[in-house]
Length: 272
Ligand SMILES: Nc1ncnc2c1ncn2[C@@H]1O[C@H](COP(=O)(O)OP(=O)(O)O)[C@@H](O)[C@H]1O
Ligand SMILES: [Mg+2]
Image (cartoon, protein in one colour):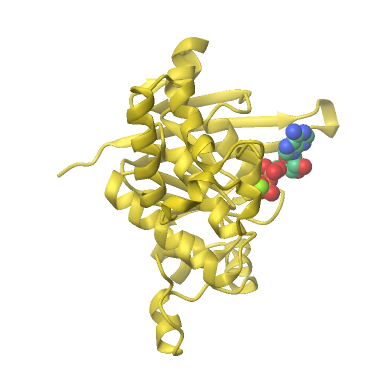
């Protein structure tokens, strides 16, 4: 079976500032992602990972290049068409509270995009919110609590439920687990993997955590100062890194233990 590309990015460029002080945050980056698969993006801090993710969603306007999502050239879309398209592309941030409204309950936060897009009836939206909370492993009694009453891991589950409410096809996770303790991090990683399978989601996983990228990605893009340093299958990148830059990255950062390794050390498997 041939799987088509959900996203194709060609020669994407984005600079900040002008003249000789300009920073080339994203410098001629090209890649494609098959529907239902994951591209990991690795690179040291400041290498352009976040800018790349934001350009793909056009939260940052690229200077040049092509972004083709589901066969549509995003740069040619009218604002109205882009608005429709953005519904299919959601982003998860390092700080879950940045995408949640602290004055709203968990249920209201998850319902908010459904209200904005007028999806279904008030009753069907309430049912959908319950279903979403269940999907991300939050007890129904969490619905009436406020996000700030929760731990970081639970907040991230709320942010994921909110992002999934409008049934996106692409999720850009920008350091989504980086602020969490290792065991919570691995619970969120396993949750995202399960949701990906269930909903055939396509992911861009941006992280400086090598273990997270290795566990989640089919292919990995390594960035250095805005440029693509390497792009290959996860196994190739981790086992046979070609550039010294990638070798240094891979040897510098501790890996996240897999659930199997945690179990082998006598620790329980993370609860999903
Ligand atoms: N809004 C902005 N204005 C000016 N410079 C920016 C802006 N956003 C990012 N940069 C610069 O672009 C480069 C890449 O940043 P970023 O994409 O955040 O990298 P990463 O996510 O890999 O840490 C950095 O040098 C950063 O300082
Ligand atoms: Mg970043």
